[in-house]
Structure formats: structure tokens, C-alpha cells
Amino acid sequence: MAKTLRIVIGKKKYGLKPRALFVLLALGIVSGLFFGELIARKIFSFSAYGHYMKFRLVKCFCVPDEVLDADLFWRPSPEFRGIKYAIDKKDDVFRIICIGDSVTQGYGIGGAVLPVNQTYPYELELLIQRYCANRKIEVMNAGIGAYSSLQAARYLKRELWKYCPDLVIIWIGVNDDASALFLADKEQKVPSVDDLKKRSIREHSALYLYLRNELFSKRIRRVAPQDYYKNCEDMLLLSREKAFEIAFVIPFAFENKRLKYYSKYKKVLEELRERYNVELLDVKGVLEKSKDIDSLFIDNCHMSAEGNKIVAGIIYDLLEQRLLKLEIL
Image (cartoon, rainbow, N blue to C red; front, side, top):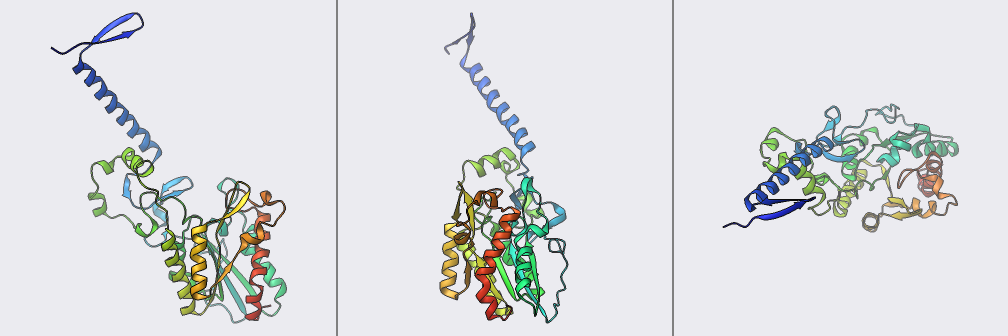
């Protein structure tokens, strides 16, 4: 005969048979999962299209349909920070394209985009033009918020090289080191009807997907260091094929009031320099000598208007010998 479990609530005693206890526990678990699923669906959009095209973007997890792109994930504007450039540039124009993420694009407080005249490409154009009387200087801001090196490489190969740059400055790596949602960038694709049909019952659950990705899976980088190498190498090889100069800025962050390299990605760039003799711009090495460095950053990687102005000066100094060889200065 099954024993009765005695439960005391206040001054009253209740008898609870094991079967009833099992039913209560089962109901509790089911209720917890049900409400957990409702909360997860309210907060996360994981299950809408399976795992594909999910990124930790500001204010959204899913790439909006109006900018969705199979290769670039989200399309950039055909203008560069509101400025249009002719693809066929004139002979007297020296054109620099600055490729990067929101650091290059210009990211302000609260997620707002900085005015274009407060970005480092704009300041760099002013500096070079000041010392160059015989050529018109154009510095195109091709920074796109949340872009990784994979997107940058594809953007350069698909569109940017057509603008006939003389020099391309690549500052990328912050988002490469960021945690991915389910899939690394190289595995991302626009979901198809077949992808939706292949989902298991569990994969229809936002709660399951959240727990699997956040708690029970090994951290996935958007772009692993070995893939960062390939992406940067692709851009470097394209520069030699299309006959334009290229330089990489070593990526860094501002943490605990100190500047810090993304060491694994720095090592990759150093390997590329050793193999291809490509120029690396160590902005961090100069910037950390600034006295009031706190005022130059608004968060762990984005700079204030003053910070961008100082960085433009550093990049100009680091590129001065290159520009002299190109007979720009």
C-alpha cells in the first residue's frame, strides 16, 4: 500500500499520495515550461527562421527583410555616409576607402550615428588635403555598423574595388570576436523553405533555442582567428590583383580605462605582415600615450568626436611615408 506524504501548511496537515505528488510536480514543470516559452518568444525572435541570420545587433536579433542580403547579411547604403562618389574617378583624384564597422562609420552616445564630420575618415581627408596641393583627396567612409571581416571582404570584392581606390584602410575585428547566435558568420545564409521544414519540434521552441545557445553550447565567435586570416588575406590578394595599396589597423578595445589589443587577431595580422609585407597601423600604440584617454571613448571601442580627430592624426602620421612614396605629399 502506497504511503501518504504528510504536508503541514500553517496549522493544518494534509495527506498527499505519491501519485498526486507526481501530478503536481508534472503540472509545475509543464507550467514552468509553458510560461518560460511565452517569455522567451516575447523577448527573443530565435524561432522565426530557424538559426540563420541571427545577430546581436542593437535593438534586433533578426536582420530586417528590407536590408537582407545573401552575401553581406545586411546591405549598406549606396551612399557613403550620405556622400555619393563617381565610380570612374578623375585622374587628379587620390581616393582612399576606409573599410570597417561602426568604429569607422562613427557611433555616438545611445546608438546614434555621429555626424559625418566627426568621423576619422572625414578628419583624415582634411589632414591629407591640407598638405597635398597637387591632387584632390577623397576619403570614403565605408564603415558599416556590426560588420565583421567576412562582410568587409565580401563588400570589397563585390562593390568597393569598382570605385578605383588608390589606398584602402581596413579597421576590422571588434565584431569578429563577438559571440555569435547559433552560427558563425561563414555558416550564415538566407533561410529557405527547406530550412524551415528541416527544423525539429524542439527547434520551434524559443526557450529551447535560447537555453541551447546561451547555456549549453560552447561560445562561438562570429569569425574565428583562422577565418579572420582568410578574410584579411582575401582582401590583401584582391588589392594586388586590382593594383591598389592596402593597410590594416590593428584592432583594439578600451577596457578598464586601458587600451587592449584583440590579441588573437593582432597575431593574425602580424602573420600576414610577415608573409606578405603588408603595412599594419598600430593606432593603439600611439593613442595610449594620450593624457586624458577617458574623454576619447564613449564605450569599449567607439570614440568621441575628439577621439576620432586624434586617431585621424595618428593614421596620417603612420601613413606619411607611404603617401610620400605615392607622391601625394
